[in-house]
Length: 401
Image (cartoon, rainbow, N blue to C red; front, top):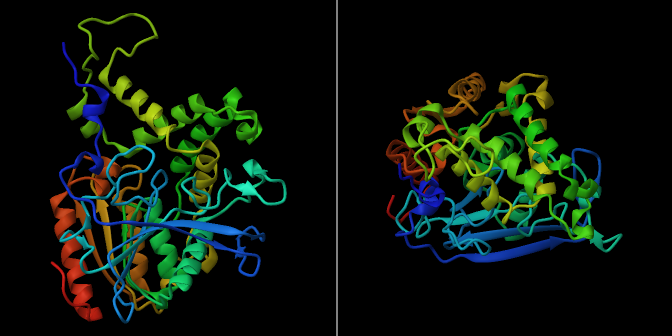
């Protein structure tokens, strides 16, 4: 039985290579001791660097800015080739001239989150006090800390109010935090495939991944950069475990079932993979370690685990959006068991209770949590319609929408 290579089975928007990438500006900004980032942990982090990409042009009244918030393993290279892997941007389907997020119409900003590993301050950054990578000396960060850093970036860019904040998964958490903490700065918000608090099940999967990394002898107590090692085995296993949660049983059956990988019979050993799904997961793990830092994985998963938007509002989620004038479009997917529709409906119910302007769509698909990254026509049409309506209300002219 012949089988496709892992590369040909890798799903995601990066496969849509026929789309032209919009012109990207890859930039960084460092805030010095006069502008420390105040963290939820009580620490003032300084200096703070944010790496970010922009696409399109800011209009005269600075009313057309769209903030794209990336997910756990994402980065700022949303629509341009990744500088390390060479792959197309992770949301190239959505971002570009004439697309749903039209770079001929909007000024798009996508920052790498604090704690990340693509240029923003994180555990791999140099600690100015020691001259060495922070490692575990980097302070634990939260989703709210990520958003505060992004607000500092918008201040630097002179943008008082976003036309739209959009993101899926952890990106959706950032969108919700933006709408709650800075409601006057968010005209419209699109949280997708997300939740207002991390569930015990999701915390459990993250802990499995963290323990896999920390059990790798090459982790060196988090100081692997100093020792010239990399905990690639542990990080690869963490990625494999997490990636399962991004898929669905239906998609796994459709794509792999119990098909064998490059063989006709079972091997009866533990070397080369017998099944296509084993090969696929190994490929996901091996390619991930080439572009992601292990300590960043620890920090970002911990930030997601700490996320509980209602906690700071008396345990009542509706209070997080009280008096909000932001226009919301909440999107979920039927086969997403990582952040199922019930979690997204909790957000919708809270928004309704708060008197917010909210629309909601649950999209029928078997593509699981990753559906928000893939080609889903109903999602595209929904977002295009919502953005076009919001743009008219905002008075933004031109473009394909």
